Image (cartoon, rainbow, N blue to C red; front, side):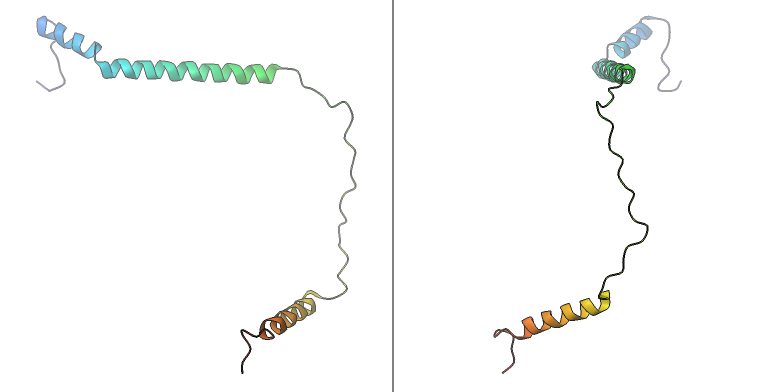
Length: 103
């Protein structure tokens, strides 16, 4: 006879079935499942009520903005030249300080 097979008749079978039905873990699991089910149903009802409510339209229509330009004008100085100037000025500032200058 397997370990999980209980006799269905007789006093031992009744005792075992009562023990299984009155298990505190099983009652706790049932309470948790019932609580989660109620919570999910409340959330569903809230969402459905929100979707069924009438839409509120704006009192004034939004202004139509102009679309951005498809092309941007090129800068007057190319990026590489501007970057070179910035790097040179940074190097002058760094090497010009007394803490980093060579004797």
